[in-house]
Image 1 (cartoon, rainbow, N blue to C red):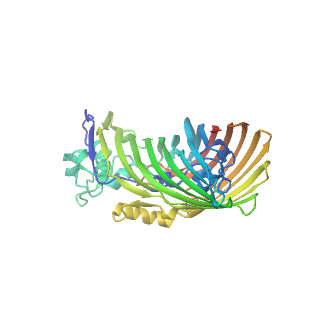
Image 2 (image 1 turned 45 degrees about the vertical axis):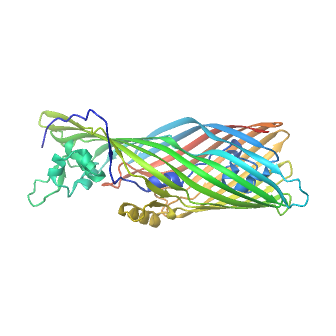
Image 3 (image 1 turned 90 degrees about the vertical axis):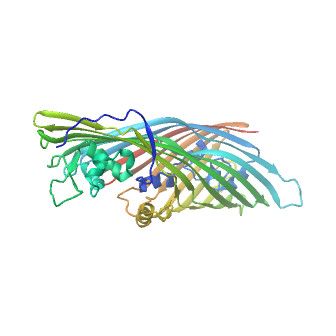
Length: 499
């Protein structure tokens, strides 16, 4: 076994390379949006497609801004808490994270047409900010893998690369695949195959025998936000039409710390592996919405709305580090390789699926309302671009075959008593996967209360959702996954006022 000590690079280098590793999970991070918005909106689980009269309702159906009688503004802050229970080969673990964040802010301006000869009675303009996704989350996975070591990840990339390249070339000289092989080679996790008939192949220095104790801490931070410009107009107070132009921006950091140990041969080979990664994704996007609401009677409202795909331009940055502990008889070696490099990858594009929403609402005068939304989103249309690049082409084909057209159902009700309002909501979202083994359906509940002080109002809401999914410890080389049970609890407070 080769043995020398390595030192990390003193200076931090920046490098632009032409390939990176992206996955379905990266696409779904933006294709699946959280239930966010005002406290009133969340208290009714977002069932606002035909109700309108709320700044977050505009994100579902742009025509909803016409149901304000006066200029209106609102600001929403909240506490977001995510709890994750993992199960990996029978070992349970738990971690959680919480954050305080600005969830929504905006205003709408109402202009009434006083011309008695015109059938177009009102127009509205709005400008809002919505937090589509709070990425603060911690997942801890621990357990004993009976068969697979994470060395398979590195071997998967190393096979076929000449040893002279790994021995003589700098980390900067490789693309993503070569860099993963270089990490393993420089930390003595792998060695060239001693078989003279197996050129450019490698073997692991991890002792065989199974029962590899593995731990993975995944910590993410960031947000996915949207600024919306809204315009709407009404015809005879019966037909309401609206459109949104949306600018998206995202900032996401994912840190993973993967550790493995074994005791299969304490006198020879790799005993411990610590593999650290930090991925930073940032970018902008664009989308649009159009919608209509019809009032066939004073109490009944019917809505239809279309949300276009979001076209993102994203860029990734990656830093990596590896450390191993190995033995050779009584000698113990601690080898580490820290390239000190930030890989800055070229801009790539992501197109998320469009969404069609149908809505029904019935207004019980000044006493309250009940509403129902059903939405359809075909996740198989999610695509990375440029499509002609093989890394994106293969991934797009995979998403087309494994992802599904999913339905969302939202039911909400509100009861008013004097200045107080009481709300309940329920939502159900089908899994984006054809096989819900990878991700289950989502079930959510909500409740809320509001109080009006004339032109000012305070609203408080609590929402809960739960979903299971499978989480890989590492992206290739081994297919073992942990089952994650995710529970999200949000408490929101909105201050709103007419002006």
